[in-house]
Image 1: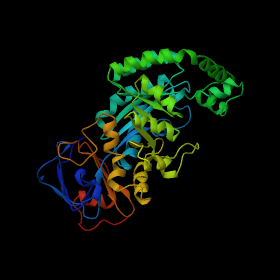
Image 2: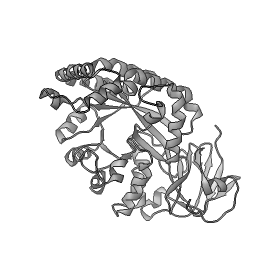
Image 3: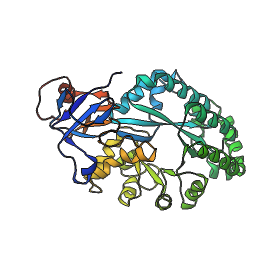
Length: 395
């Protein structure tokens, strides 16, 4: 896939040094996959458009919808990954962490599928413009999966691991039938009885988890892997995760947990759909109030990639922050959190990642990732193909 060599002009650019005052004029050159100094032989007039840094999605599992035509029909992941990339590119995402479970849930969230996904991504990665990476999410009560996780990290160079525990411990401890049991069982290809027995076995592992997880986390940290916690509901839960090596708090359920993470100098990730909806669908703390309180380091797509851009503009519309600060939460902020300092800003020398926005509709009209065009449509396509100049019009 070839890279473009062009100079973009006429647009309003969100420059890193002027982010607080909003987008401004200038020119931006792309050469050899990076932003560069000096003009290129070909110039494209983007008058009427906004040029913003490409978005970095720190956690998304929406890709699952592209990898199976229906429940249980798991085809070769390599055939679905280009479709997942297309959705991300059309949403303005240039780097994406695919959040892949290692879980008792089975199916697409089981270890066998995780291994297939990682192998498939290695086969197709060079044909994709978007930088797709994998975050492994380990269900901590699945002690028998700890060795598999270590093998995957070593074999595929996984740089980010998150620890979850979604076993319904309270219901099991009370002798109650957990909610959604039958649906979960069918999704995993088990009978409800077998699924319930499995949950009881995992619940019985609780006493063994801390020591096993301490050892696993220490080994991962020694390899340079970033660790994250997930759905912390109390400050004490976060502090336990932090002591184990976690430096990223994903989707904390309470302000107290988020405040504890930020007090420790660690990152906090919240879901963009939560912010767009105006609150958590589970009744947890809202992303908007956390952003307003200065607690959020990054917004992530979670299960809906288009929500990333919508969330950033919602923050502007609500007067919570300006566009520079809002866009930082979907670009440079998550990039730095993930150790990807080479992207997330329109600066010479950085990876040429950008998204082109029509400012009235706020629709993504073009995405360039690493100097490669990953998405292009409408009036923007006409400009890049040498069409008429003039102001962009809303589709």
